[in-house]
Length: 297
Image (cartoon, rainbow, N blue to C red; front, side, top):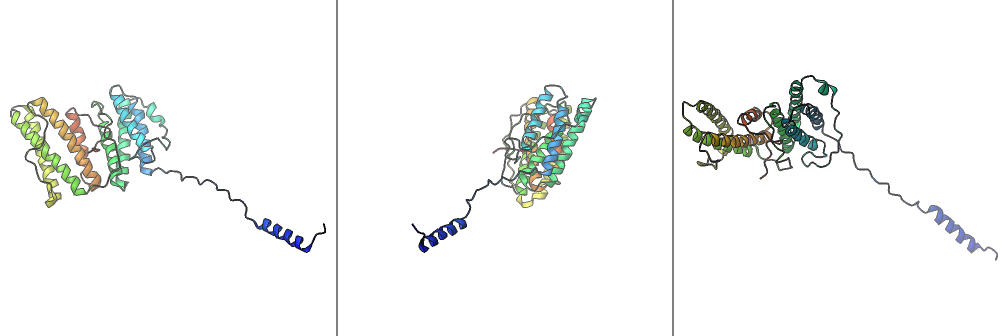
C-alpha cells in the first residue's frame, strides 16, 4: 500500500514522542551518615584500653572485679551513644607496648589509672550535657577507686541512662540531705562509742568535717535548702560493727549525691569533695561500684 502523507506524519509523531520520553529513574540508596565519636570519649576509651591491660596483670579476685568495671566502661564508650549502650560501633584502640613490657605491675597500674583519670577529667570539663558529665565523672570516681589494689571493686550496677537535666540547687539539696542523714548516724554512733575508744576520735573528726560540708551547702542553697528531717531512715546501729556498716552505706549515698551535684553545678564545684569520698568508702570496707553516682529511682 502506498505511503500516504497521513501515515508519514503519524510515524514522525511517534518517533518524536519516543525520542523525548524520559529515561527510567533509578533510585540509588542513600548511605547513612557514618557515626563520629566525640574526641573526649575517644581519648577516654583509649585510656581505658591501657588500664584494662594493666589490670590484667594483677591478681584475682581484684583483677576479675576490676576488669568487669573497665569492660563496662569500654562497652559504653565504643557505642554510638554511651548513655544508651548497645553493640560497639567504634574500634577499640590498640594496647601500647609499654603496658605489657612494664616490669612492675603495680607501677603500670598506677600510671594507667592516672591516664584514665586525666582523660575522664578532660572529658568532664568539655561535656555539654549533664548526663554525659555524670558518665565521665563516674568513670573518674571509679578509676580513683582502682588506684587502691587492696580494695575490692564493686559490681556493675545502676548503669548510665539518658535523663532530663536536674537543677543545680535540687542536686545540692539532695547532697545536703545525705549529709544530714550521715551526721545523724554518726551522732548515734558517738553515743555508743566510749570516749576512750580510739574510734571515738575518728568518728568525731568525721563529724566535724561533715558539719563544715553541711554549712557550705546551706550557704550556697540559701532559702532553697530542703527541710531537715529530724529522724531519717537509717540502718540499724547497735554496736561498732553495725555502725561501720551503716556509715559505709551512708558514705556511698553521699558520694552519689555529690556526684549529682558536680554533674549539675559543673565540674569545678564539689569535685574535690566527691573524689574525697572514694577513699573514705574504701577505708570502711565499702566496694565502689563501676558507675558511682548513677542511682535509679
